Amino acid sequence: MPMICDKIIYRGQTVLTLFHIGLDKDVSKRKIEKTEKLGRYNLSFTETVVEDEEIENIKDWITKEEGLISPGESINPYGDGACAKIIHYRYLNKPSSIFKLVDNSFRLKITVEEYLAICEFANKYVGIDIKTNPMICGDVFVCKCYQRNYSCSKENSIVLENIPADSTVIVRFKKGKLLVSSKKTEIEESQEKLEIQPNCLWDSHDIEIYHNKELVYYQNDICYVRHIFLNTKIYEPGKRVKLQKIGTEYIIEKDSNGRETYIGEKINEYDQILTDSFSAINKQIKEENPDDKVFFIKPGELDKATELIGKILEVAKDEIWIFDSYFSDKNGISSNLDWLRIIAYCPANKKNIVFYCSAPDKALNTTELINEIKKDSVLNEMLRIKGHIGIHFYQAKSPIHDRFVLYTDGNSYGGINIGTSFNSLERNHYCISKLSHSAAKIILYELTDWLNDGMLLANEEV
Image (cartoon, rainbow, N blue to C red; front, top):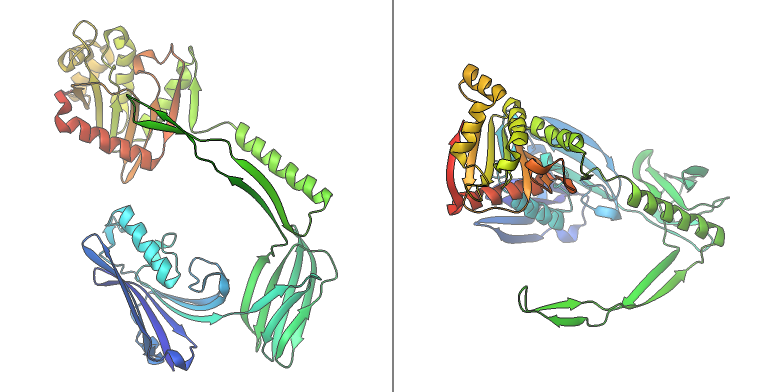
């Protein structure tokens, strides 16, 4: 019996293989190939028809999993339309065009952008999400589709079509989180239409279908669209304001005219009150819940700032980068010598500080800054015992406005954005904002590139 074989191929290596069994005869000559360029290499999808003996040639897998998967799951190739009986053959060898082995663990060999392009391509052509399941790359799936048609009638009954003989249908009706009724129907002869009537009010249901005592279909929390609320707006062209210095023009959008439309069943007043209240309270909680990413610091809250910055300095294992153009200002050098004590004892292998010397009468250059370090009792003691404190100073030719503390820990990046310089943490109003992995990585790459692109005036390590 013929089967469809789908493959995703990148740089000549198979990323994913799917066999689809139980097909009609009219696809026996089917052959499809789609190819796109990803950088310099080909990313391809192929679909061919093979004989079922091909399954016997699936070898060298490490584990095999078999079972039924519900509609809409990330590894269901049939999406929301059907359950799938799946045999999943797992392989330890992964495509070397995508992954590399580091410390007995796989990492991406390609860029995240390239990987996401492969994920999108695979999802488009074979319906499987490898973005959230990267370790299924290189695996083989044998799939069988179980599709069932059901709907909800105006009388709130569940109507199923084309149920084969020797089947059992179980429908569980729910109201919110409550299971309010369960109906089990035995089918001795095939039926074109089966209607299951509930004896209660419900708003969702589960369904299970057995054929010859084997589970062939299940799905939970099925809901139906009973009403639609549309909030439509008609946008008008905005006002164009001509500019001279910051651009050519700026468009101020006009307020638009809106209209609300309800389609379908009316929501009863009681449910509407509860729904609106639920949304309003959740919105209030979300808006007023303290933000754990941004911290506002007032004058006199130096302890709070020190704790936030200190935690970031302590977590770094590989590198610390501090960008503060005014770190060497003479009026704040005593405070920053304390920070240098903290930085010196932090566990990072490399510690880097980038600053700008605005003028000889206002700020220290690299040599003068190191001389101040040697006068500090704690830092000088470390120098005497260890011979160094492990901080590399970079003097830039021009300042940058914002201040950053960034770190790397293996492949992870992180850090904070500080709204004032280290020498004025105790006397200003400012924010300390946590940066995501992606933001910290971009900022560090951009600033180090900027520094290396002719902006470095001097550098010394102590």
